[in-house]
Image 1 (tube, helix red, strand yellow):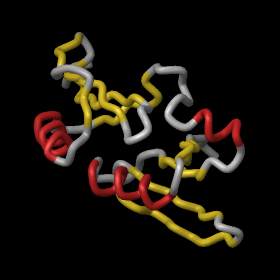
Image 2: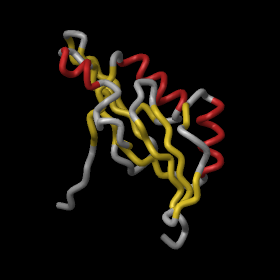
Image 3: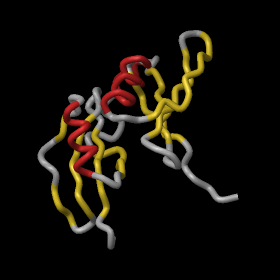
Image 4: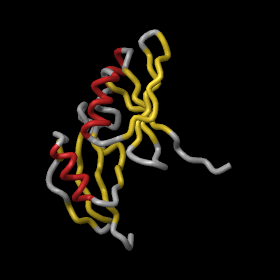
Length: 131
């Protein structure tokens, strides 16, 4: 059987605020939101069909709470690939997503760094057709 990454855990402060951002601001799809009892939920979001998903996990311990927004030590944590950079960049900006500078043309494509509501960094990228 081929292997793939199905989900990546993303620590969040609260489920509903994270869902509001990932679904409403970034335009991700809510894949699942299952109550697991004891204030725990299984919440999965995806940027699009066939993509790996983020499992939004509410931080419950002091160590986890310290890691919210700093899971990669300030580095980009994920690369969100698009087929229409201008469309997604403009839509995300109109929804309040914070970008760290204007889009750049790189040898591999068009890219801009943005952050989620906790400060985690992501790249929005449209690869060059020949890359």
